[in-house]
Each structure stands twice: as C-alpha cells, then as structure tokens.
Image (cartoon, rainbow over all chains, first blue to last red; front, top):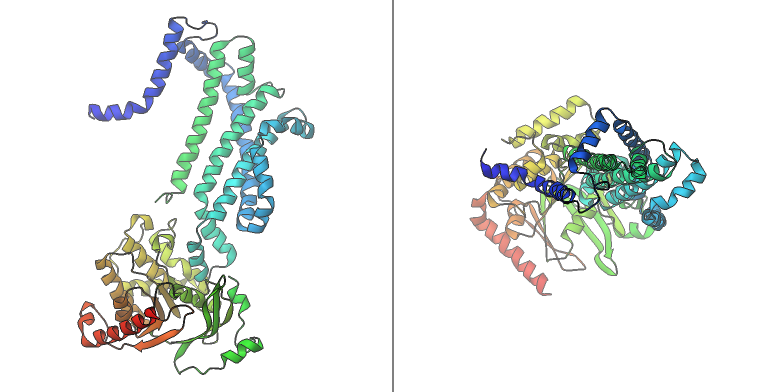
Length: 254
Length: 277
C-alpha cells in the first residue's frame, strides 16, 4: 500500500486526533483545573477499568436494553400505523396536524405526564422514549408510503395485482429508504430520552444516572468515560442501521 | 382505479350511454370504444369518442403533441379513470383481460428490489395457473426472445435498453390478450432500438397479440404498424386510420421501400393538416 493510500485511510481520524491533542494540551498547560479536566489518558483508563472490572459495563447494558426496548415498542406501533396513514390520504389529512404538533413537542416535556400515568420507575422511561421514537418513525413511514412514486404501483396494478399486494410488493418497498430514515432518527431519539430519564427520573443504574453521579462526587475521569460510552452507543447504533439499510435497500439511490 | 367499477359491461349501461353505443363494429374487432369522454378540469380531451381496434394487429397511435395519445391507451388499459363511455375487450372489461403494459420510463417501471428474472416472472402469479404452466410460459418466452443476458442481475446493474427489454419480457410473459406500449424506445440508443423492434415484432406476429403502440416518431409508428391511427388536436378525434401491410419482419430496409414512403407521406400530410387547423 502506498503512502497516499495510507493517508486517505487515516484522514477520517484526523479530527479525533486534533481533539484529543487539544484536550491533552489544555490539560498539560493547566488552563483548566485538572480536577475538572483530567488528562485524556486518565479518562481512557477510567473507561477501560469501568468496562473490565467496574460497573460501567452494567450501566452500559441497562441503557442499551432500555433504548432497544423502547425502540422496539415504537417500531411495533408506528410502522403499521404509518402504513395505514400513508396509504389513506383522508385519515392522514385529518391527523397530520396532531402528529406534527406532538412531533414538535420536546418529548422531555412529557415526563411529568408520563410520571403520572406510569409512576416512578422503568415503565415511564421506556414509555416516554417509545413515544418520542414512535412519532419520528410514524411520520417517516407515512411520508414514505405517501410519496412512493406511482408508476410502479400502476405497473403492478395493470399486471393484475390486487390492492393489498400492490401495497406489500411495491409501495412498502418503495418507501423503505424513508422508513430507514425514520428508524435511525427514532433510535437516536430513544437514546437521548433514555439518558435524560436516567438522569432525572429516580434511577439507580444506566449511563445517564452514572454521568450524574460521577459529576456529583467529582469523579471526573468516570464522568468523561461515561459520556464517551453514551456517545459510542449512539454512534454504533446509527452505524448498525446504516449497514442494515445498505444491505436491505440495496437498490437505494441507484 | 374507479374506472372499472364505474363502467358497466354492455347491456347494463345506463340509457344515455347505451344510445351512443349502438354502432356496429367490423368483424375481427378486439377493443370497442364507445362514447368515451375524458376531461382534465374544464378541458375535454375526449368527447363522445368511438374507436375499434382490430384483433391480433399492431395499431400505432400518432398525433399532435398533447392530443392525448398516452391518455388514450392509459384509459383503455384501465390505469386511468375516464368520465364517460365504455371500453370493452370482446365484451370484457380491462380488469378481466390479460394486459401487458410497457412504460416509456423503464427506470420507474421495473422493480429494482427483484432480480431481472423475478421481475419477468412476477405477473405470472396473478394468472391463477399451476407451477408447471408458469414454468412453461417462462421457457417459451425465453425461447422467443433468446437473450444472451445474465437475468440474475438486478435492474440497476443493467443498461437502459436491457431494463426496457426486461420490462417488455415482463409484459409478454403472461401471453397478454392486449399489449400496450407507451413510447417504449424513446430513451434508448439506436442499436438497442433496432434489436428490441426486431424481437418485439417477432413475438407479436408469432403470438398474434393485439397491440397498441404510442409513438412520437412517425417513422417508427409506420414501420411497426398494421394500422396507423392518426389523431387530431383536442378535443381529439380520429383523423384517419391508414393500413400498412408491408411484409414482416420489417427492418431498416423497409423504411426506404416505396410502400413505406407512400404511407408515411400520407400520414404526414394528414398530420400537418391537423396541426394547422
């Protein structure tokens, strides 16, 4: 492999290197109180220790499970509903405003309501996250079904396909790229809400609660390690969906 | 797709429509169109339009821009609803008829999520026939077309002409009673067009499929046709229906023969007269 190819391979890492370098530099010249800003190495060690022997891995898992459960619930509700909405313009027109309104409402503003409905505990966290994710998915699925181009549907129709087969064989597949957009934004909304819920709604575990605790007791390396873990989680989930989309919607964009 | 439900078969039609429907049609007619009316907003594209399409022949539709050539075949094939009148295929509606349709825009007609071969096979499931018979139809189609093409590829891995070939094969695999072609060759390179015309003619003549071809290219309209249907400007009428019975297969050589030039010249005269009106 030539030097030029190595350079192009390494290019995406430049940003990270600059950031870590800057962090190390600021730490070295003590521009910020070292208690508040530990060195990158300390934070990395805290992360490795937390995963290997501490409780970080356990909190990590909790957050993953909560996010995936709420995402799963959101998916199960929003996809069928989105298909119904998207394939029936009258229903869509009558509730478009309501959906748009709730979609624009910050899901975190719904915490008190959900606390009343579901009590302090696991259910509320999952319900709010599922609510936020479901709206994003619902909107995208409905939009995808609605804006699916008509010619392939006509082609299936003229070949003798009954209405429901046109939906399953053509319209749904046409809308897949948009469905994936909805799933990606849904899962990231679910993660955001789960982390916030863990911070503020009486939690004893999870990354959100861990970040809060570390901050309270000034265990800064662990706080940075937990923030990094949350970031990693979001990034990996997004990546998984991108890869799944490329696999499944292989015709997309071509 | 309300057209199907709205337009009842002969005899069941309401009294006013029935009055217009009593026009005899010549022997060998496949599609009868009576009193067809279609409006876009306030403008009538078709008003009380009558037409007979002969059985097992290729009819080219040619006319001024915007006269509703595609609109006509879309209404006949049942993918566009109409406001009045009746279209019957030997007494049947479009929905009761095996129809093949080839769109101009092949990119948005084939299914990119299926391999080419599965695209071609797709309509067979709606014929209500057994597996053996389905395979038989596939084999027969493959023999007629004799393509040296890897059909296990996806449409987006193919050239435009190859995709249109897949689209044509998909339309023909069901042994359609009627085939509709909406400017099928207009976006393809000439070499591919010659190949597709040759294969298409071979299969259509072999199987005696009633065919309606919309073309904006007069040479092509005449070259492939048994009848060249010339339409007027809106509201659209039949200006003339010219027969062209040069022997098949018709090739590029046909286009320099006196008979072809004669028919084309007459078609052009009629066309220019109608455009100037």
